[in-house]
Image (cartoon, rainbow, N blue to C red):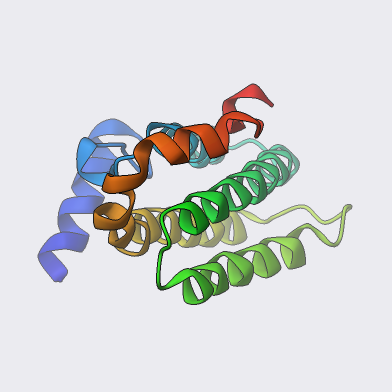
Length: 165
């Protein structure tokens, strides 16, 4: 566990990114992988703003955009889970709902600016949550989606992709 954390920190220092996409994070649905890439990009942009000593207002704008993307992605992921008859649908949605509530609580006070420490704590929380959720919780869907890729593609066809926002 300590090796994993140190390895993650070393990667972050070398790339100036909180989270890096790799094919190991894919669970086999291209649309969902693309959504994850967009969310990773937003977390990394938040990290860049914080590293450039910009004020918390910019970070909050990106947090609001991340929340908007995440909600759309979660609804699209619900479609994937329903289509492939994913047995842990309810518990998976609980993970999503808890994150939504935490982010909305942070966005509630529109005038509040994040201090440097609050920004760093937020970035660490978001990067850890996103990486851990994609690499563990989302990846449990891999064996279920494999037999339903055509149906998933059709089901997602009428939804707005995150990258279209």
